[in-house]
Image (cartoon, rainbow, N blue to C red; front, side):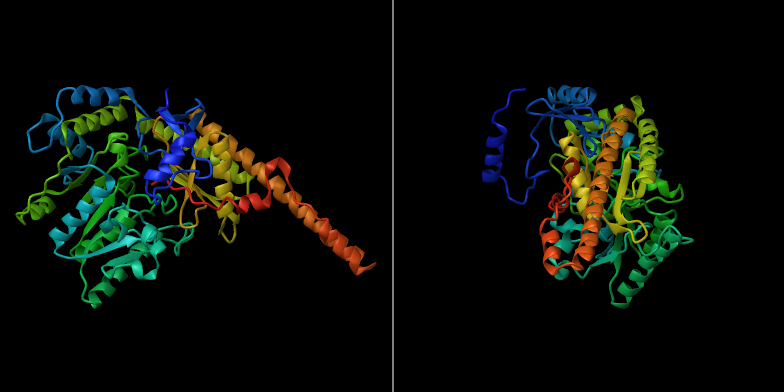
Length: 496
């Protein structure tokens, strides 16, 4: 493929014309991607990278059926949704058919952030309240209203950044949180904390409009809520006059395999009041949606204020959305997520038995996290080690990311066409890196022990000889692993 600029020129122009807050992956040596297909991406030299992180290209990069649908509709018409067009109503019908019956009204928009912002408006109008309960480490979007309810972001701005109408509940993390896997009912315990937040808010004359949560926290560290948590939280929030918003922007459209939506992992008795979608819905095309109940939609319309979105639900976007739904079904991508996801979990569990750095493996379908620790008993986050592995995998042309509060959780959320061969390739590479790392650390430990022994022995002869041993101490460099290299890779790699 012909490039307009060399990689160096592209970097130079990016620095000149693109805002400095817009970061790139692997900033010291960024990758220039010129094309992609399926679960693979290719740089300007033709080198192939296995994509383990791109939950946007949900059915695979450059899927021919999606591309065909986009081009076919673009050649005929693209206009705004104030004109009648069959694509809009067909897509809404297909989309709501995947959801519980009461979730029947759609608002088509352009991004996950736009969907979550609209969801807040719906909740506040319906409830007549202002306050929002969110989860610690949550991320819901980049617009101002969503930065305000995203601790993952506003915590970086200092203690004063949290608004008075925002209430933060603990992430329902059963590995690192207050209520862990040995608790008899962690779901109920974490839900009770939300109930206590509601009580305290009422005591301060504040009212709850909504509780919002990612159905599975991604930036929070691949957290799977314990059974019963959402149902109990919804009960408390409803009694307070609020609504439950399920953010499926990262984890919807069959990623969990056994269900089309991740919130369905909580059981058939739990149904959110509002569901937001984005990223995978258009396979990379700017498309998103809010789905809610008739009651909430009518309350929103009762204000008399028209809701208009120029590009939301345009014929091309809806044609693409329909094609994505078709591909998920025709290619049995939910089944693939289950089969490959289970296989990947099995391979990772084998590595957990082999490597002490792996503290926990959690996930469903093709949404999996590997929590790296320095000490399994204390569950001390292995942050630098996680970053080191990410950068080493990049050298092997495997793209994986890490996140979580301590940036120590390796995140798998690849395109849904990810194969068992791909899974084996990644895990073998991780195994190799962990093995090399452990050898390097063992070598370092052995050298340090030898130094201590020599110091004790030589101290009997002279103080000077002890100093000479220290001065000549060497550092382990097996397979290119050095302790200082590991510490220098403590960089955040984000995929949101």
